[in-house]
Length: 358
Ligand SMILES: [Zn+2]
Image (cartoon, rainbow, N blue to C red):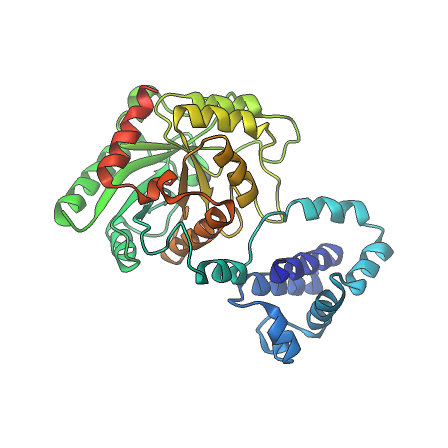
């Protein structure tokens, strides 16, 4: 059991009951603090030091004690019952399934295992100042080198997603010139790949023309709309992985922790097509996405898929989200050779180019 994740869930239940108030804000802050803790709460609670963690108050401490002792919290249960919010709370629980707390990720990665952290070569989803990211390309290269990576794929948003500062094709040409210059400068030490995060439209096509997609070395296609609908979207997602030129299905569900469920689809059908066309299923490591999660990834593996473990970073500290993706991949039992982030540059490029012929 991921006890930190469980406790964060109970605190978010309390935050929901408290609504837009000082108390509600306090519980949200406590939930975040627990998710970010680098170790499990159990020894802290037992040693009576949990309360000294910033953001943790006496009520949180009490809920944690109840959880450790009984596997649940009578305080929270009583509050839910008295507010008659059982139904709403049950819906919220569904938005917190199959996530991992920071402590759980550390725990999983502290053991020997595969896929490896040290052999990870580079990350294939990240954003720069060319769309909605915070960092210029040269600084991203430095940050990746500092983490021991030897390549990375820049995937700023496409022009179809104006809210995320999507690039016009004129800006793409400028960005590509900048990438060429950096690759010349870092030759042999680091390779930046020219990628794009295209947006999957309602009808399953991506928001760019084929001749535009061909200007990139690889294409990530991701859903950014209709992520709260309960209608089945199998056709939309099947369309996306069927489209020529698409290499990676980015954050396939589009879910967000405690916020939205994301796309509902028959994932077996989508994964079967992705497996046949060798489109990589992404494990997006953003702490509030974790998409796809380990259980869904295990199913995709059974159906023959290959995978990408990416950070979806918009700023340097977020590059560490790959740890979360690697932890999910370990739980899913994905062999390292089925993950594109461990392939050589040549193998990666050859596979990406074949996305037009498959
Ligand atoms: Zn995205």
